Length: 172
Image (tube, rainbow, N blue to C red):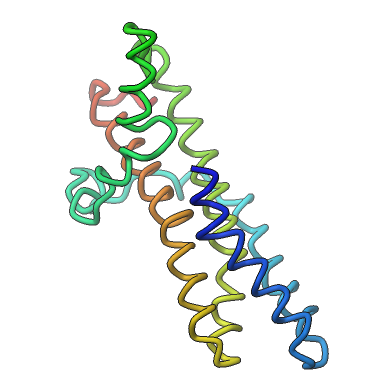
């Protein structure tokens, strides 16, 4: 997983920062840093942001977008859990119904972190496009898709599944 993060997100971001530092345009690094700092707003989103929208409730949209396939490769995903169960047969990501509330909190925090990094990387993508650095912009975009967008969708998908598994009227 860390290799994927380095290859698809950290390396392109580092290359972008290097390119901006050396592009010779006045204040380009300052403008880029200012744009990237707007991402801090992700830390102040209201609780309503994390409530499932009507189109998310069934989970079909996320499944069509490949979130279940993506989930296989994540730290709590199918392949990792299968490997852990080889050594600890009773291992469960969610050990009981009482721990569903903790999962809800964990998915919100994870989504918030990925949203923050998504927003940090959005200005560099736009800047790279404006500068004509199409390959770098594409690399940043694809990295963001894999490292931030899919995990955001996965967290929302997991939260929606938790909500569907609870009796009506009892939020996690």
